[in-house]
Image 1 (tube, rainbow, N blue to C red):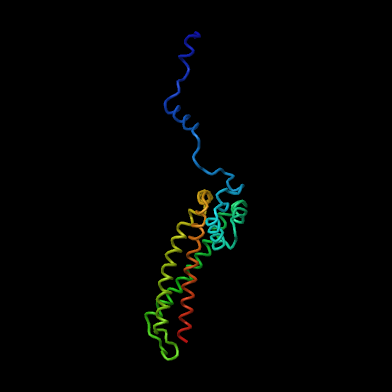
Image 2 (cartoon, one colour; image 1 turned 90 degrees about the vertical axis):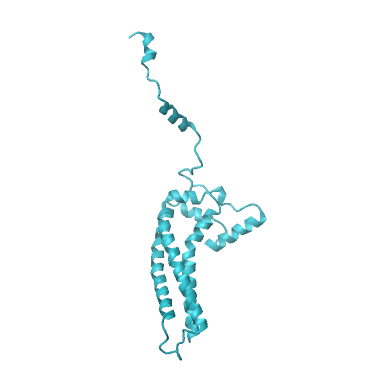
Length: 201
């Protein structure tokens, strides 16, 4: 084989190969690196403006009982802490759903029945009936929220989802609010049922 025929025998890169190599040279999108939890995210710092900074601190205190998010970053740096935290939360939420169903059934029974001893326990008075009706409504919405959080919790407990959530300052607050809503609604329904018991005495 002569030297003149050597260039002809070399493989010519196909169009798909050139396109793939071209895409590999493009800059990557805003995908968090694997060590995203090692350094404190800059987006988690409090805003510099006066009003947004105080709103940020109030949200931190409401959702976490702390003034900043450094505790959450320290928690996320420890191995699979995000997955374990959500796994324990979903387990406890299933237990809350069972109790929420009992509260719903109790309120429904009291609303749909007459008191056997109306003179001693009158739970069909206006105040008692209003509390029972509100407890029933909150229990129903609580079960719906718990079902929604349990269904979406399988996705949120993945570490890849955590990287997306914590990319923005307010996403983590919305996530914490979504996790807290079933517990808040459950507490309100129980309190209304206890208030109804006070009106019947």
